[in-house]
Length: 141
Ligand SMILES: [Fe+2]
Ligand SMILES: [Fe+2]
View 1 (cartoon, protein in one colour):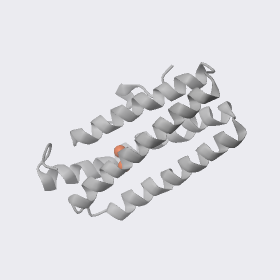
View 2 (tube, protein in one colour; view 1 turned 90 degrees about the horizontal axis):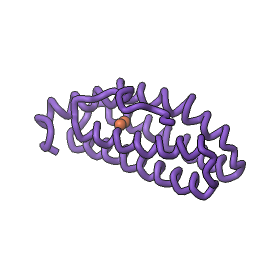
View 3 (cartoon, protein in one colour; view 1 turned 30 degrees about the vertical axis):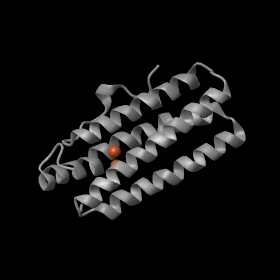
């Protein structure tokens, strides 16, 4: 029971970002499986926290690269990450208040899943292209 298959995840030209995306996918799929298998709330809490920490690392990693490479659309990409940070904060709050598995599952299926693919195909791809051009590729940053 995976939410997103590895082959469904778009690849970008900067390898470090692909690795970060792949790690996030694994954590997200574990969380999604736990939701589907009706695991205890404490298990969902633990995996949700792990996922949220990973998202923060993912976004900070990209923002750090963008700043180092003086990416031209930093504000735009950073702003979109901030919007999702806010969204996830409220998803977590609602989960803690209502313990509604259906609502949490639906959020991942209907909102987060399409968002991540779209985001990788657009902002992350443009960022990765810039990194490859400006820094000369893998290992340069
Ligand atoms: Fe990303
Ligand atoms: Fe991003």
